[in-house]
Picture 1 (cartoon, rainbow, N blue to C red):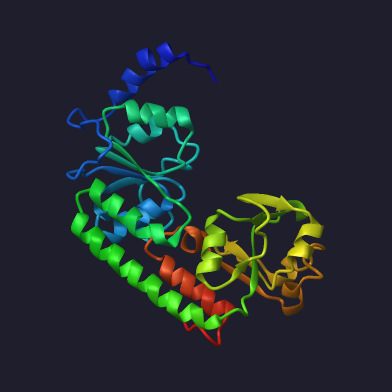
Picture 2 (picture 1 turned 90 degrees about the vertical axis):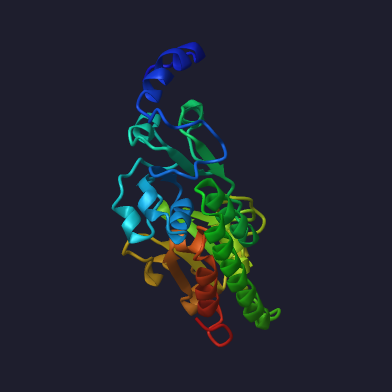
Length: 295
């Protein structure tokens, strides 16, 4: 792949890309309330747009946007961290709405320098930040009233969940979120992750607080974590099977293996931190504490 200098990039490539976008678009980081051709980058962003009633205005989405089903029918511009500026601009959007963390950086630079308004939404792994995320999306597409109503609904559902989970008391289960088990190597979630946040929201305790982010754990570290429950993302129609997970040496002596305690949930639903998060948190809590928290 050729390497472009800064002058080549902005002097040759950028004008060609900008020619692909509508002339009426006005560059802005505030959004476009009149946008009718939105490219949504990030599963949570797409989900919020549909929840606000703006689904018909979404003309393309990235590969992490798997909900709702209608969104999956839209053109796919690729994985949010490996976007192509040509692929995005070829959709002729009048607004690009993206989660923080989209990339690569040079592509994001080209998109921001184009004539298409591009708004980046901050997406911290925190349930308390969901309302602002919804309001920011609403402001970008001119649906402030709808966004306020949805944000209030989500906050009320989170408050209800928090009240119910409080009944668990101090007898909380240790939950280890396993991102992958390729080759028997356990990639787990530490602090400052969406997985840790949803575990806490559901009344559990993250079993790997010593690490930050998603990192591999040695067998000894998994044994020391002593998880009561293993939590995984359900991939497509193939949920992780307990007999396969607990056959791994790292898990065999854990409390989770003794109880065959494995929970698999859809990834975007579980750790997307969007409008469905209260429902996801409640579902997880009801599986951790079926006698206390009801679905």
